[in-house]
Length: 177
Image (cartoon, rainbow, N blue to C red; front, top):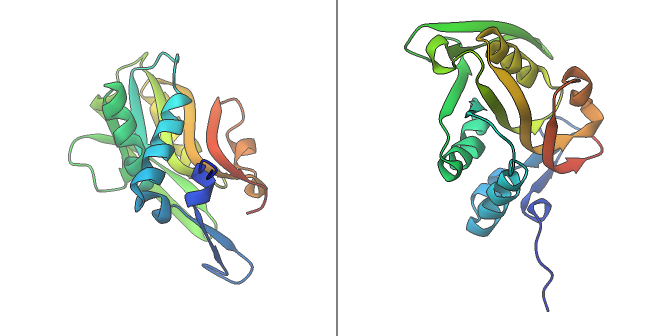
């Protein structure tokens, strides 16, 4: 009898990418396999069961991939956090530090009402910078982040320290970076 596969079984490990010494955890191998993708979404959705929330906020771009099926399945609105200049209506934005420089993200001002409870969704927690900046945007609109949900976590990069105080769930965790 064949053992049941886990989400981790579908994730590819790519050594020395993008530079020597790094093991890149590639989720495209999850997405290309219908069983793997179903399993990933089902496991993420299970982590939201019983949670009261109003919307899913997905981070560009892989948060869109993971968040839209969740929003569809759970009959919730899906709100985008995008790179600066990509959203057509009035936005609020913030900049945050990257390893080599800064980045800017935005959200439509009218997409979240004050008091809304939201789940932030992305593909992975690494250093936590993009998720933290996104949480701050949501909070500036008067909404509350009730959970941060990601498929993967690279524990060695200590993103949870940056996100301290938030309820965080991940499906697969890797000890290193």
